[in-house]
Image (cartoon, rainbow, N blue to C red):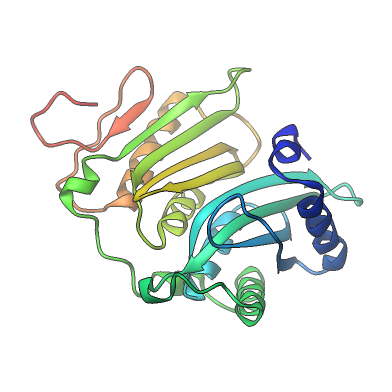
Length: 253
């Protein structure tokens, strides 16, 4: 596991994640809760055979189970068989505001696993999660949306940074947009502070190559459209690969 994972979790959490990985066996995925006070909500770990679109499938399952992501972190490691294995951790709450003070219970976590298995094995269409999409953000919220790329230390691995207003199902909208653009998320970090979301996605092309500057602009527009598809938004790029939703006629980028 990367150093960032070892810094983030104590021995009790690492042990719980390792147990879930061992119990997965030959299954595509295993899901379980663990004790954590790093963030509000119920801490849940998803162990799965890594594949393109996995985060989109997980976030779709979360939406379909009536849950919402407060924070999340996605990691990749090599399993004992040498294949890539995803270790994704989320702090979840109920999507319904009236139920958000209630912890997510074991039957709900079992339902999350079953739903995710159905998605990964093709028994359920992930577009089901979009049957009742959340309403578009108010224009005042959309104006505070920023989507930009941060260059990696080696100049190769690019990190897409998204800051916007929080809403239920946002992670699903973002991860699905990236999957539909044909890129792979190799690591991610999701944070909700108040009513603001700060997400980071380290992305590469499906063949592992870095994201070219023209492709970066395509991804930025796709992500901005996923956040709020209203036609009133204007997408602008800058030399620093950043984009911001702005009012027509302004010079803001």
